[in-house]
Every structure is written in structure tokens, then in C-alpha cells.
Length: 333
Image (cartoon, rainbow, N blue to C red):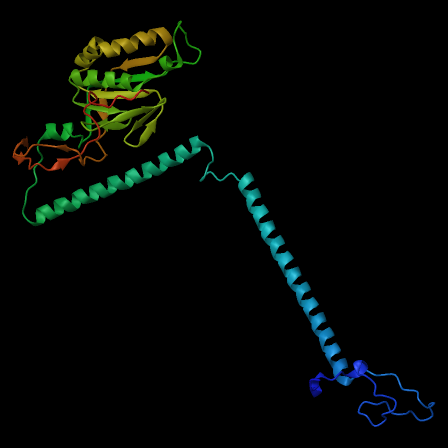
């Protein structure tokens, strides 16, 4: 039989009493004075067992208190986060912050304001660059001469004022006449209608031209997106106004004789499209061009004299637009 290790002996109430016929055996109950022979006293828990039980109960109570505290803190944190989230959603739902409108018209208006601000910054920087370039040129003794007044006007470098005309095109009114077979596309101004007017004015001898508030040059390109005109990043709604500087009589004759313009005027009479030509007595004004003139795709053969004294070296130049309006890309408006 295996030898019993002293630490594996039973203790306390679990200790086995010694045999009655072995009073000297370890663990045998001692006789109680005055008690009948053969009677034993009840077993008592040992001090070690009582200490272990008290320690275990103390740990259990401490663990329960810790769990309760952590649970309370977690619930409080979740409720605080939920309250903050609900408050933020309520403010967003009921707020009227116009800096971030949710409607497309408001977003477009904000982008237009931002674009105008950036355009002003670009114009200021361009003026600063021109001034610094002139200062540098003067410091080295060079003399910069313009290619000529005609070149400055044709390139849109300078604003132009003189006699001329304005042409306004507008969509048909909603309650206007509706001839049989006329559809919704027949009631709005299309890109080709603007192209017809601009081309006719160029053909009539216009020296400078503007569409809305922007100068039209050889690389200008506009596009009709629905019933909105897009020109160099800006969007316009009708009526669309074309301003041309030139001999008013010749410009009017060119409009009257152009087949595409006559076709548009026939729809003016049929469905009520807007078409108005004015000849201001005080003349008209066309602003300078403020867009980019860098070229990426167009190039001039080497050796070609672009301007007097300026010979092309075959470098590349850009223009995704056409020029004047005869080379505009035709996109249905």
C-alpha cells in the first residue's frame, strides 16, 4: 500500500477518529471529564480552515464590489456617448448652417462664390508676376515691346470699349404657344444657337467679343449642359448675352444673313424663344481675358513666323477649345 504523505492527511471534521481499542493513536479523541465512558466530543474546524474560509469570503465580496463598480462606470459612459450622439444628430437635423447647404442650388452658389474668390486671387498674382517681370527686364537693360495693339486686342490681353451691339437669347416662357410637334427641346436655347450668333458676329467683322461677363478669344470653348451654359469653369443660366465690338451695321447685316441665325429666329416666332438685339448709343465694353492661355496639344511648325520677329521653335501649345466659335465642339444642349 502506498506510503501516505503527512500533508495528505485529513484535517478537522474530515479527520477519521482513531479506533476505540487504540487510545494512544494520534488523533484519538480524549476523554472528557465527567462524560460517560466511550463518548467522544464533537469535532471543531481547525484555525487554518476558518482563516481560509474568511479569506475566500473577503475576496468574493471584493470581486463583487469591483464588478458592480465597473458595470456602473460602463453604463454611465455608454449613456454619455449616446446622449452626445443624439444631441449632435438633433443639431444637424435642425440646423440652418448655410456654409454647408444640402440642396444642389445652394452648393452651386457656394462653389461659384469660391471660384470668384480664387479668380480674384489669380488675377492679383498675375498682376504681381507681370510687375516683377517688368522690374527684372528693366534691371538688365532690356526693353519689352508689345507685338502691337491689334495683337493685344485679338489675344484678349486688354479690355476693349467701342461701338457695337449686344444679342440676348432666352428660353421660351412656360405658358407660350405650342405648335403641333414641338417638344421640350424646342423651348430652350441650345449650344448651337449661341454658336450661330457668335460665328455670325465674327464673320461680320467683330473685333472683340464677350459671352456673358467673359472675353471670347481663339481658345474659348463653351458647353451646354441641360439648360445651363458652362464657360471656363463658370455656369450661367439664360438669358445669354453676347457683346461684340465692331461696326454695328455690318454686325446686324451678318446676323440677318446667317442661315443658322434665321433658323433660330423662326423658332422665336413659333414657340416664343427670346431674341433681342440692341445697339447702345454709348457703345459697349468687353472685359480682358482672365483665363489660361497655356497650350498642351496645338503646335506651330518650326520656322513659322508667328509674330513679327517671333519665330516658332516647334514647341507644343494647348487648347482644348476652338476658335472663335466656328470650331466649338458641338454638344447638344
